[in-house]
Image (cartoon, rainbow, N blue to C red; front, side, top):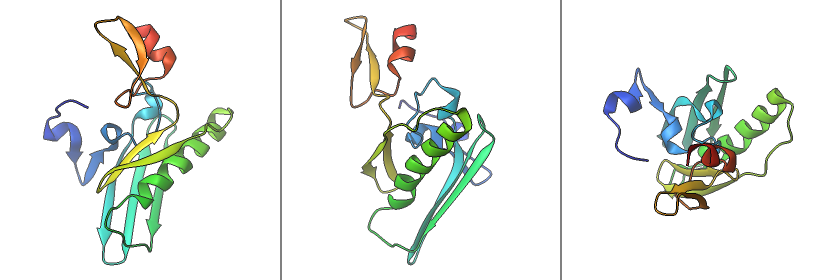
Length: 139
């Protein structure tokens, strides 16, 4: 979403994974913040991610080689949200993952609202990344 400077995205071999939408959390939530690195080599795909809001890290390695590196990100979407629900003592959300690029896609846990500037109201949108509550508060 938007343009980012290189130093906002990459440093010390880690990416700001938050902009990739791998968590499925509202983009205004501290639970959406993640840092890590994706990897691919002959016969393997992987992702390692750190989530500072819950001080937890998850590493996923697969022995699946595909034309796109989505299996680790897809798995991270489900694993992180199960972990987050357990840490917070809440019900596990129903999340799904949709492939968007070679390195992954979008984890969707229902945070698909965006503020429509002309209507001055929250609307569901493929490009939305806010919970309904966060959208209503900021729109």
